[in-house]
Image (cartoon, rainbow, N blue to C red):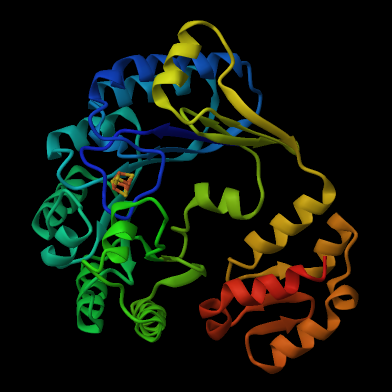
Length: 375
Ligand code: SF4
């Protein structure tokens, strides 16, 4: 079992962001933390051992550290945490100091996921990030000085105005720091964001599709050369530092999510909470359920998810095991697709293991879509 705690608070909303996060909601932080505790209590007792805890958002590092430490203590008191449990804090430069990081390290956080996104201040400004490259370097150094030995850095390609040279520089500078984990995400343009409006209004534009593909290829080549294992479409790690928490999602494991909009999946039951933090707080203070939606995952849905998520992993999916679990023999139901995609060198099928190639990763949506037709 893994635990996720959602903190929907940000200093400012980034231009491309459509996550459940809000600026100017600081007055709700303390009652929200109390509401999370109240929600956790509704799921106790739990006998499962907890392998990972993830404080995500939003910007959890924007929350006063005493509140974060208090919540972690509450979790430790109420769940059975494995001795080597991975405990991650999503961190944004410009929201936390060295002494605060030291405090959180002592409280038990053992992994940081720091959002840099780009090594050029003009690009950071262009997407409305609150921080500069220098602030990122300072928080990274502080984290190392404090003794954090498991740090992930998030970077993005396909940003407005981003040149190939910018991306190469970002990759160079990030790998020079030798973090244990690197997430390299392609920017997704989401409807309703400021960036989408700016693009529609002709104020800015995104790089061409060819350039974005080249950036993705450069990330794969560069990070491989620097000793990172490309273990998931957007994620790279030094051996042994793959994110335990994210692997839980990709392998379809159970997790409990707490907080506004958080989703949980346990024993083929899935539910998600109401999105608005103020309603979440109010309902918990009234002792009312915060669950907005519930569904039972039937075998068909689980089979689709297992293929979609499993193919995101470079290790891919064992088709024999898949058949045992879901009763679907993809060699029969998607035989012609497997043959055609393999002929185009987009997938490999070794023994019974199906995986995407580098070219297949770049076209992953199309490839996975075709294979899903066989379910
Ligand atoms: S910091 Fe993250 S969650 Fe907050 S607005 Fe920016 S992208 Fe969204």
